[in-house]
Image 1 (tube, chains in turn orange, brown):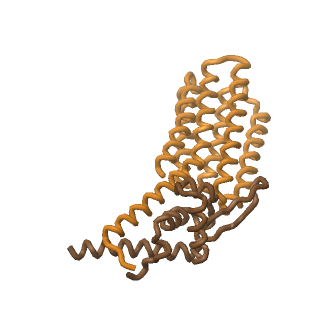
Image 2 (cartoon, chains in turn cyan, orange):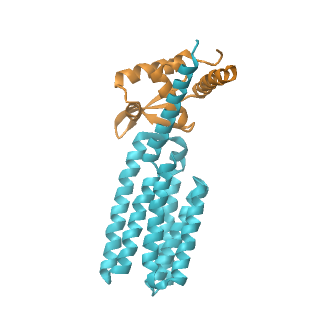
Image 3 (tube, one colour):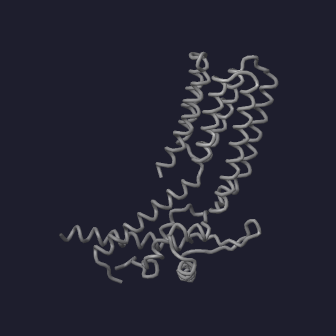
Length: 189
Length: 101
């Protein structure tokens, strides 16, 4: 089989184009979407903490969590139907149990500590989510650990140094950070 | 030219293999997803997949998802090796051209 340099170049261009297209397609159905979904949940939820008062805040979080959870389930099902990932299927259930237990333990801690200040309660939840994020980073993608550490550091800065705008701080940097990370992961492919 | 593979070099099959080797070794892609990604018809894709399967370059596993039959396609180790050799051979053609001019 003989090929001219021009034909070889065209074939390599096709290979590269298809590889790029595949990576983009995988990332379009990948984990980035969950970051964006929960980034928006945090963005609107913490904004509700800042701008609203009383029971409205709790209801806002409830609606946002239900919406975020439902969207995550729908996206997860869609993802599962397009690819069969042996490596992920094996650990997928354990990851699910890990997050479930993490939220149960977070709830138990809030029950025991019973923080009078809503900010402290919010900070405890943020710390638990970041523990989960970093654990997932260790398991799946080490580069995302740095983002988890950065958001944790920013949350602590907001909690201790900027208590007056803590919720806005978390909406912009926590929620915004997750949305930005989602789009970063998508564009990196 | 050593390493060039006539079965893989066919344009649609080259694109199929490029997609499959981009996946991780244990991962497989659904037939309809692959069809949409390559923008080919069911019949066209099916014919080329059979050719690649006969050469042991890909494996096709039929499974039931939500009680519907689905075909998951993945590159075999042999397919990955041959594809890599084919790409290396294409690159060496370009390299030799560069060296000769």
